[in-house]
Length: 108
Image 1 (cartoon, rainbow, N blue to C red):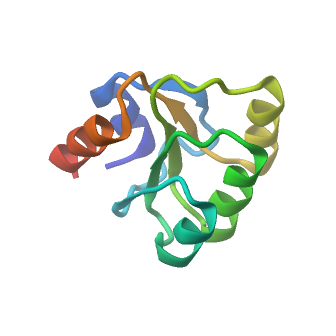
Image 2: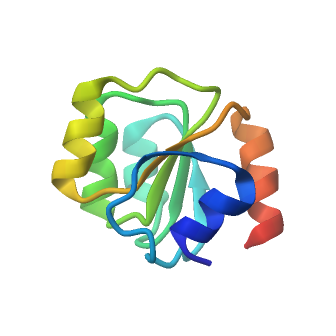
């Protein structure tokens, strides 16, 4: 499944789509950046509520397919600009992390 297909099927808000045709190779959920860095895999979709600039650094370092920000957490214009500059896919949903993971799991 691609990032664009995921966004369409789950009705996700597309904050930044740099590589919409990127394949999603699994998922990881977590909010502790160091924990995610040690456990998420390249190509994973990351489900989180974190919206600080460090989330983009982790996603870039791990070559994640996308970030889904849950609970409509606020995303600053600076974060959006940085995601665009780094070529990252950034999505948002009103679902909480559990709901997003269940929906994602049904699709993957």
